[in-house]
Length: 136
Ligand SMILES: [Zn+2]
Image (tube, rainbow, N blue to C red; front, side, top):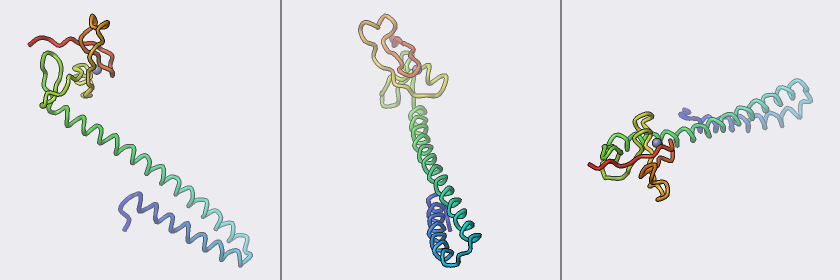
């Protein structure tokens, strides 16, 4: 029994192979109506196969996106505030307080270049806000 899109794709490919055999048989009969019906069926199966491949691609993209979101969520669960910035339990960070507080997005802050330090010690590459680490 089919359990996923990949299995359905194999079934459709099997149906396409069967249609090829039916097409060969129909060539011998000289029946134009049968030939047209077989040709239409062949086109519809090819279209179904292409759409299934699109579904597989989308499924793959969504799985990758879900893994990314889950890894961010797992990391976000353990975030701690130190000096107004977020760090994970291992001390990795700092992460952007604006992104995390507004969207639950974990964005690593980058150390500001010396010439821009007047705006803050760190800048968020996602929201472009600058932050100073408060002394604690
Ligand atoms: Zn941010």
